[in-house]
Image 1 (tube, rainbow, N blue to C red):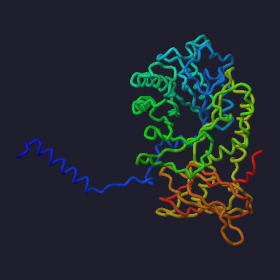
Image 2 (tube, rainbow, N blue to C red):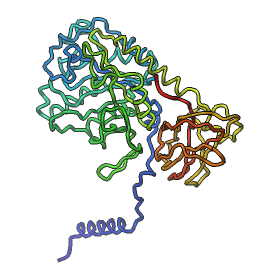
Image 3 (cartoon, helix red, strand yellow):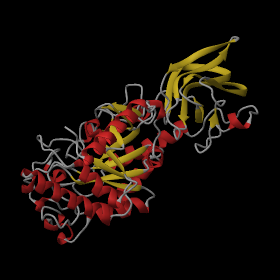
Image 4 (cartoon, rainbow, N blue to C red):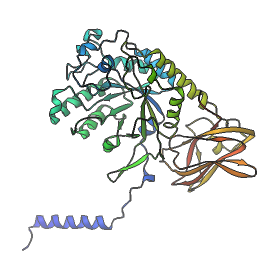
Length: 455
């Protein structure tokens, strides 16, 4: 039987398409070919952010609310976000993310979607907007601002109806995305939810309508919808080789790691009589060096108390943290070096906007620095220029000792920033030996320090 003309044409077109698919050269997706977006590299350069938890839980000695708290309990009588921001700025953080709605469903802005918000609280007689005030204080102190909006909502009755709740959630998101200025980060938390399936494509579509440049944080389970991924736990450390490209469901994506950990052990919200939980300065520096120092973003949890202020001990610890980071990493021992060519100089000039380049077409190279006199050092800091991808795949840091190169560090991933510690050594020549790279290696900074233990 002959096919009708229309069907015959359709069959021919399909056959031609299949033939083209089988004969055309296919470009395989490879991790070394992936590059970050400009928004991702800009965000990675921020390195250190703070996430703020403040809600009805603060007044009820809870971590996770169940959605039944009376809004009347929310009444900070000394609310001062400028005090928060000055302490956060002193810590060295570059941005803050405010938990605008946690899992209990209580909203810190006067949303039109529900009365379960500060509109029903005594604070400012229900006329206040805490999101607006925190955003204003952050920017006034030179900090960028972002928000966390929990998908899980234990109060809202619409949550039982996925379609109705998706509409509700997107309306809340639209308010936050359109009324509070440029958002540096949007936290898409996958916690809880009890099997509820959200319309994540619609959530991202809503966000991107108003915030095209916001970095979306999501755990790896929400891989398709995020720009950054969770480290895997809240220990405050990356304890593995950190590659920015990750494979999930057979897809490769540039997804840098964010490491979230609270200032107080196991506590994201403030609790009374809880001073013993405050992390020590050595603990915080260890977390910083194993988060930022392993190529990740460090997100430190900070919590105002029921007055609406950061406790004095928290403020003091944040100041100590900033001072310690500055003291440890502000003065590279390679600054006073013997004359070097312009290429090498760009890696040791203290300016991350310049970089050393390996010879074109090379897959191995060395960056050597010579010093006028021997120096003693026990730590290194190396930054890779990531705009063309994460190229360094194996490296060593070596010192010239007794007529040969001694290996101090042998590792693999560098990425945004890598801090390595090793037994103290004294030398007058040192080099970064790139043993393998997928493309031309580019190094923004190569620095040495004598750090010792944190006191």
